[in-house]
Image (tube, rainbow, N blue to C red; front, side, top):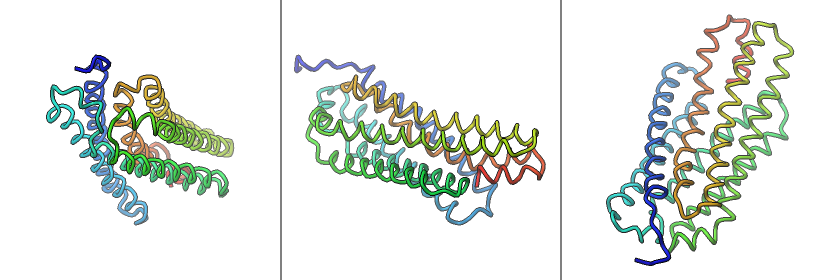
Length: 275
């Protein structure tokens, strides 16, 4: 065996396997939320329902790709750790593309939400531009990844782009979160005390979902830059797409519970945040 290469199953295949398993659990949550959404909101706009269906289909493709790449690592290439130095499975590269599409759809949706809430176009345009750049970067990584000959060479050549994708995505998530919270806080000052409690709850949910995707992106970037030889970054990457889709569906499905907490006088506030 090459003396330069030291195989650590815990931080490579083991880490990736844990990430894929967690991702599958979250995919079950995504599927359940999609089922709940279509059952509870049959009167939603066709475009919104099409968006949810499209995101779920992309998540199916993402899950299949992750499962296939894990099969190659753990079964087909079993007991051949030197193969980790070669090209990553094409299915893994395809999962990068699916992740880019899901992230762009969800961030684009929240950009539209902000436009609906504020009636101002500047921040939504910034969000849409960053979403497009993230998608474009994932597309380049996907195409380049299909042609790679070694993981080390690919990482050295495209580290700047991968880091940029994570940085732009994190900045976009933070922009969305901060803007929505700011708009909600403005709304809070214009409503009754009882309704203000509802707005506080929505603000808390927004912070939880927004910062969760941001923190996941930051952690992935840190591990990719500092421990590139490990697959810990890939484990967090496997989970990231699920966080995007679940934040979208949780936002839409929360309308039912919020409406049950308050009477019709707060309905406008619920619609205001949930569209």
